[in-house]
Image 1 (cartoon, rainbow over the protein chains, first blue to last red):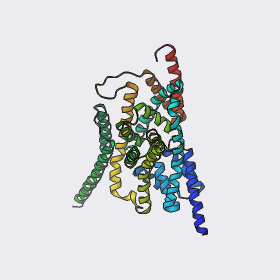
Image 2: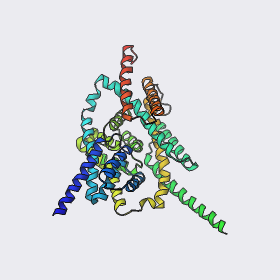
Image 3: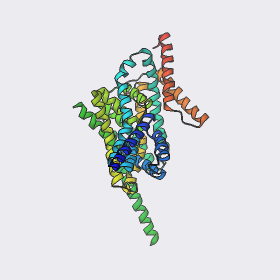
Image 4: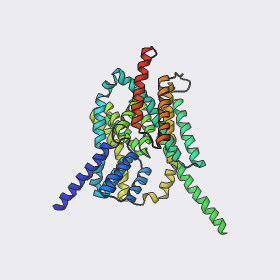
Length: 201
Length: 197
């Protein structure tokens, strides 16, 4: 009985901690990692710093928002399947409520002349934000012929498809690139093995 | 029907986005435009809202699009859709595949995906930039220059650049949004006075 109660309290704690993380991080993703580190590693000692680094690496190699991936992972580590549900719900709920409320009044808000003007400025700013996010990610990509080919193809194909009004989902490009990566990985490995074997001879 | 469509569209987006945050923008832009859910302008407005409200950008965009298409149930469906794939995948990894990162197949696959996602985000920026700043949507479809947008884009880019040079820190996107909103109000009001806008 006592154990059950303890578990309930722990789930509630997980939920509230991630609710706080969801409610107070702007920009998502990596902004959230810093807060998770502060709350979960330093204050609550739920997971170790090495665990957190693992979580980030896994979050980057799995689909979905990084915040959700880390909440699910930490929740599972601390409280099993129920823990992961509590943590994920906690991190999602603030956005869901706040953005839903904004969406109700947004169009009326936009009808005010000066708000409309403000958003004409903001639209230009968002174009910059998207471009700079992409460029920042490009800078983090190691410069080798394989990566440069993939980047150029992805940019050229996407822009060309859009200009010529061909509908082609980016999902296929991502999958094709993943397959190309797999092939390159194994071909590269075999080539290395072959040269090593030749060296032995 | 629209609810199911919202759920599955965002489920697909959640399933195929690697890297989170802005990596989702090319896919969301594909989906909302091809379904006719939003205009490009509305899409940019929503990203600005998502960026200025707490929480992951992907969740915010899903909630907003869901709400405009199907009210409160729509926003829950879209959000659930975008969250579920990561939730399921991470649960499987955390419980069964503890050595997930050590599989060579995963490493190989991600080697191809990472540069592709970076390229896709840049391409989304170029696409949206062409249509917002130059009204170019298709080849040969004509163009007109949005001078106000271009000026604000240039000021924002310069501000971000000099902020980084001087303080060695990245400027907060929210601050950039506030600056661009103020510029929008000032320039459009001035333009209206002299009869350009």
